[in-house]
Structure formats: C-alpha cells, structure tokens
Image (cartoon, rainbow, N blue to C red):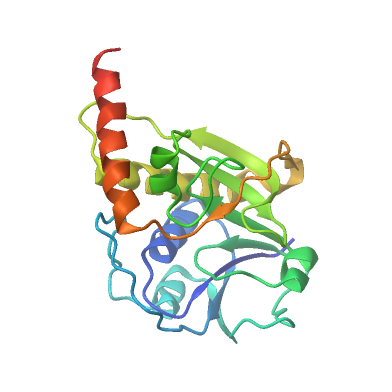
Length: 224
C-alpha cells in the first residue's frame, strides 16, 4: 500500500521531526499538505509544546526526496488518496469518507481509550490516569478505532510538566515511525470498550489544580 503523511502547509514541529525520522528509517512516502488556517490562539498557563523551525514542509520534502502535494482544505468529500496508509502529522478532524477508504494512523498523546481529546497529558494528570502514548487506526469517532500500540511514559522525581511533555512527544514520534516500519496496521486490534468523552482544552483554573496533582504524583515517586 502507498504511504502518505498528512500535515499542514505551514512550519510544524511534529511534521519536521516525523519526516526526518521516516527518512532515516528508509521509508518512501508522499506528503499531503492541507491549507493552513490561522485559528484563535489559546494561551495555556503551562506550555507543553516545542516551537517549530521556520521551514515549510515542501522544503523538507524536497530535501528528503519525498513527493509533495497540496491537497486544499478538508470537506465532506475530501479524498486526495484512497486504499493507502496515511500517517497524521497534523490535521483537524478528518471526514468519514477519508478514514474509511484509507488506513489512517494517529499517534495520540494519551492512554486510549481512557484519555481522549485535547490536552491529553494535562487531563491524564488531572484525572489520575496513566500517562502514555497510543498509536491507532482512526475511525470517524474522536480518538477511537483500532489499537496498534500503547506505551507508558516513564516518570522521574526530578520531572516537571514540560520535561514529561517532551518525553511524551519523543515517544509519539518514535511510535508513529515504528508503525510505518513494522506495518503495525496489519495486526491492529479492537480497543476495550470505553465510553469516556473526548476532552476540550483545559481551563486555567483546572491547569493550576493539575500542576498541584502532578507535584503530588512526583513526590510519591520519591518515596518508592
């Protein structure tokens, strides 16, 4: 099956790191670039994201020898490829037609199905859930589908929120590359049943509570 990476037509850290890692692994692919839409910039109290280098995905693709295609904006009839494997580097909610006619693989910064939606790391801490990463084949529901792999992020007493976020991000990239190298989509299994709702962005009030819960969780590690 053909392999593609879908992303934004804009400098994007996860895309940059993923494409370099796939190139190092000797993976051949094409890059599908969505129109970039500037959105209202939510400002969290505690940042967990690393900045991107000011390099467009087209430039990276050309440098690494990947085909590059601009595929426009997402709508209900969005179908730039079919019968393909598509790794998500960056995209909004993809339409049902696209995810049913391809094997679309996401690397989610949360332990599915327990921690769905946005700010997954923060919600995992707030809700006393495992801190992990899940690779899965996407279906039309948010953060659902079929399980490829799921791994815990190691925690240390000297951690803070950002150091955990960086370690989790690195694991996201590693697992997404592994899914391409091992063709993990061929052995994906059903998730255990769970009706947990998908989270929205965490409010500032809950962010403050989340940090206190993280501090307590890390203190418990010192006693082990």
